[in-house]
Each structure stands twice: as C-alpha cells, then as structure tokens.
Amino acid sequence: MRTTRKIGVVTALLVSTAFTSQAQTSTTGGTPAATASNKEFRLSVGPEFGLPLGDFNTAYNWTFGGSVQADIPIVPNFYVTVNAGYDDAFVRTSETSGRNLQLIPLKAGLKYFFVDNLVYVQGQAGATILGNKTDAGADKSAAFVYTPQVGVLIKLAPKNYLDAGVYFQQTQSFWNAGSGNLNQLGIRLAYTLGM
Image (cartoon, rainbow, N blue to C red):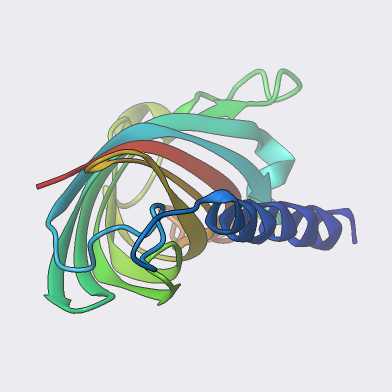
C-alpha cells in the first residue's frame, strides 16, 4: 500500500512540474520557450536511485548507480533509446552472509512524448549482467530485464535539459531456485544534451 502511494505521489509531482514549467514560459510568436526540438538526437547521463520491492526487498535495502542513454529521433515526438548503466544493490545489515549485487543493465526501447515534447512514456528491455556472480552465489551471469518509465524533460538552456523519470524495473532471478525476480521502483535524474 505504501509503495502504491509513493508511485502516485512521485508521478503527480513529475507531471505537475512539467505543466508548471510549460505554463510559466512565455515567448513571442506563439511557440512555448520550454518546448524542446522534437527531431534532435539526445545524450543523457545521470544517477539512478532504487527501492527494492517484494522478494528483492527482503535481502537488499536500496540501489544506487547511474546510466548513459541515447535518444535517437524517428518521427516527431518518437525516439528509439539505447541505455547502459551500473547499479549497486546494497545488502541489508541483517544479511551478514550476503554481498552487494553489482548489476549492469543493457537496454533498448522506445520513448514517446505526448505533451509538447516535455512529458513522456518510455519502455525498455534487454539484459542485466551480474558483475559479481561468484560472490553472490548465482547460477546465471545474465538475466532478462524490462523497464517502463514516465518522466518529464525540463529545458534548462538551448539544447540542455534535465530528464527526470520514475520507473519500475524487473530483472529475472540469477538463481535457479528459491529466489524471486529483482523488482525495484526507481528515479533517474539525468543531464541531457541535444545535438
């Protein structure tokens, strides 16, 4: 129940930020100053913070890492995305025999802007590589991952943006038995450069 409330609050904040930034911009000629170009290649880099859910939450407190993402325009407001990252899942102190997990997600997907190239939905899928398979006692070194995300692109200057998104990420288990999927609710804050 608390997780559902957190998702709702964060999503509401992101959407209200997008509409507020759009409403506060004024320009001559009728084009909003905050509207980003809908045909530019974008490269973003930034930190990610995650809260493990379900079975993943029983052994791990939180995740922290970062990612680099390229947004490649196809048609106006529609992009192909390629993302590479690194996340460290921090083991709970009560799990004395456990080790932090070193996760390397590699994903590709689609991003669609539905409010003046500011508010978007994004879906990605790929593989997560477990960097410390031996230490974690895992059976597999790679697992399928998918990540739906909603977010907002806030214009800071010409071709400079802040990309703020909330996502749910599910990584299939690295263990053959006795462990569920690695689910997490996360936030990505990235500096984005348009080209």
